[in-house]
Image (cartoon, rainbow, N blue to C red):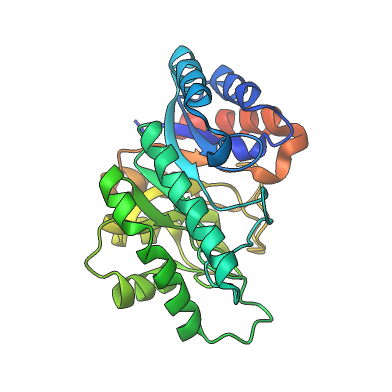
Amino acid sequence: MIQLAFSTNAFKKNTFEEALRAIAGIGYTAVELMADLHHAYPPIMTPARTAAIKALLAELKLTVSNVNAFTLFACGDTYRPTWIEDSAAERKRRVEHTLGGIRLAADFDCQTISLQPGGPMIGSTMTRAEAARRFAEGLEQCVPLAKEKNVTLAIEPEPGLFIQTAAEYLEFKSAHFKNEPAIQMNCDCGHLFCCGEDPAEVIRNHAEHVSHIHIEDIGANRVHQHLTPGKGAMDFPAIFEAVDKAGYKRPVTVELYPYEATAAGVAKMAYDHLKPMV
C-alpha cells in the first residue's frame, strides 16, 4: 500500500502544531516538514522545540516523509538565494540553509531533504555551464554532512529553473556526481508533466534516482499551477502503478502550497480523491 503524506507548506497561515494536527486529523499518516518560516526553519528548531514536535508527531502517529528546504522566505523568497547567485555570500546562505535542513532531517529520522535546482534561468545571461559549476560547488559542501547523517540530497526539477526536467537532472548528475549516492532526485510529478515528461515513465525508468515523490494536479495546458488532485489532467493511477512497480516504499507527498487560505480543505479534498487509488 502506498502511504500518503501532506506538506506543511500549504499551512503557512497556521502554526506548525495546527498544521500537524490538521494533517493527521484528515487521515494522512506522514507529513513533509517545511524547513522555513514559520514551521521547521532550522535556526528556530532548538533542542526543546525539536523534542516537543517529535512528541506531537508520535502522539499523532505521523512519520516524516521529507524535509522541504526549497524555499527560504526567512531571508529571501520562493527561490532566492539560490545555488547559482552571482554573490558568493548569497550562495553561502543557500549552502548553510541546506546544512541546517540535513541536520533537521536527521533529528526527525527522515531520509531525504528536497532542494531547489538553481535558478531562475529565465532572463539570465549566465551560461548553463557556469550555473552547473556553481550548483555542483555548493552541493559538494553539503555532501559530507549528508553522508554522515545518512540523508539524501534530493534535487527537485522545476519549470523555469536551472534543472527543469528529469533529463536535465540526469545530465547534471552524470557530469558532476555520477558515483555519489547521496545526491538523487525529488520527483515532483507535476513539474515533470509541465515540462512535457511523463512522470510515470520517469519513475519506471529511473527508479534508482528517485528518493522522494511529490504529487499535485496540473491542468491539461501544462501550466505550472498546482491544483487539487482531481481538478487537472494528471494520470494518478498510472503514477501510482509506476510507484508500486518501481519498488518505491517511502511516502508520496501531496504538495499544495498555493492554498494557504484553505489548506485543511484542499488537504482533505486531495486525500479523499487519492486514497481510493492507493
